[in-house]
Image 1 (cartoon, one colour):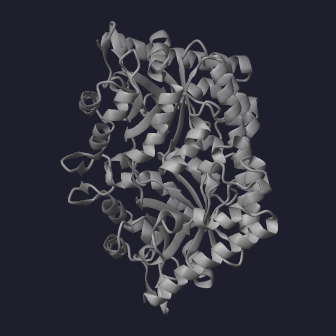
Image 2: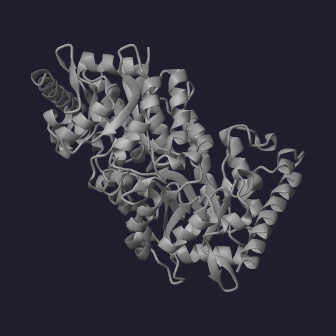
Length: 294
Length: 294
């Protein structure tokens, strides 16, 4: 099954939540060993056990594993293997991007069938141009994977270049336009494409504009939860399908992975309870908005 | 001493060559164990021993270590430690880039004083905006490191976005303009700035234009050697200082790390001889052009 079809099936079954696994410095509870490679690994494996059956998609952020050196990368590999065994769809957030022969190296690391950091899709940066994305798209075609291209990010600095006018339209719109053939190539039977776009839209109008530009691309929407966007905001670029809004995943990290109740938990059972509650709450909030807004 | 002053001192002493350590699939000679993490490590350590005293700057490409998983990253860490002990200036080519809190993770991984992947400077991607570069620049100020921003890359796809007009000037020129305050912040006593720019200029005019836009930024120039640019082309953005052209480093990978004579070597001594010859030849070629062109 294509990546796009797997992702949309996962959101149909569990809802649009994508759980970020972002072990920021100082956030791993002492219950797991704190801010160490061993702590990351134990926490990540427990997160997978807790969200399994409640969310279909996770997104680990590579930076927080790299900061622990090769031991952190070993923890990441272990977590990725466990996620695969748990049947979770894994969006690897590493924002790679380089010339063709180097991009092949990243493909081998993340998207190849025997990749040491196995995932279902990888985030990539478009600044260097389409030829730097091509090896990822080709690997995605061959191995039923996805490629997630940064289009519009949600940080203030996205105004510096992304939203400025490149020959008459915002740079991020030019990026999306240029991706059209790649979006077509990664289309699944569902009609959705595994060439995903990161769309941290600043408002509903912009999100709808992105959807109009790329009607078939699945969106990865950051900024929901602790970063401030409401469920309705986050779903602005989604479209009605079968009685509710569909079109991608909405990512939440801190609010689901590190809710206050989990940070204060005195036992693993209490911690797990808090993670399950936060996951269910986010999924319910998003599903309510997805149903109400159609 | 600031990173900029260290880099310019290294090029004054040895010449402008930066040796790329890019272990592409299938290129590590069997003498070292071939395409395995152990092969990468043995090869990288031997490369450092061979170029030490002949080149002052090296540039490992992260992708080729990541493709070997955490074991490849362990090899990278070992190579980086050896480079530091050998007194080489290390430009880590990883092209990272993410929102502030995530960028802090990459800073911890590469630029912090206790970074597990220690280097002197890190390549970063500007697409997401200045706030995503800020943590790197701040770390560079604190720890006397450098930040190398992708401006104009040398691949064909750089025409897709970088060279298109953003509000009246090519996107890559807008990026360079926006970096002016950061360039100022990382200036050393030499007058050069450790906010470096990747400038894979397509011709002398463009390189001189980039130099005019950023007179103090050190350049990292890719494309010399196997990728086709001549020494004179590569030095187009450099300026006369003390009787020769200065202003950054010129990177060569395949032609210096994998010359045919080294690939065919039957013994480690022959391999080492070939690497030394290739390093000296590149350095001599660049120095001749740098002296002749002033």
